[in-house]
Length: 160
Image (cartoon, rainbow, N blue to C red; front, top):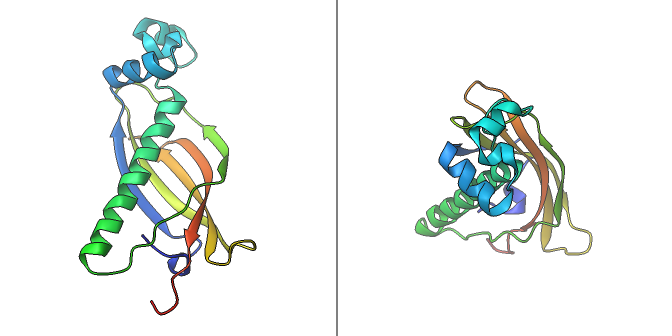
């Protein structure tokens, strides 16, 4: 993981992609968002979405999974090289969550994160605070999802 000092506004990470199938859309909806247009193809066609639509929370959850996996892979690579591993802190929240376009069965969403702001913490001098814009883009290059997340990032320990 990168330390606070390694991060700059504009840094971008491609996180990977997730394919939304009818099966995984319905499975997620049954458990977490059982609205008709997430559960039934015909109900989805009759809705404003025009087809079986993934829950926005499913779209967000896929993003979170890819964010976590990317950080875990980066930490493992750093540890393998014998480098210190920065363990990021919790997120105090997010804002500006937008589901811009529907995600329908058959869509593949590619996710990315771009650092929007970097600042030192006033109350915790060993930490910095970053904000990152997380986005999802479909296979046609259309933005479908976006939110601004905040995270605590440790500063590099003295001597490293």
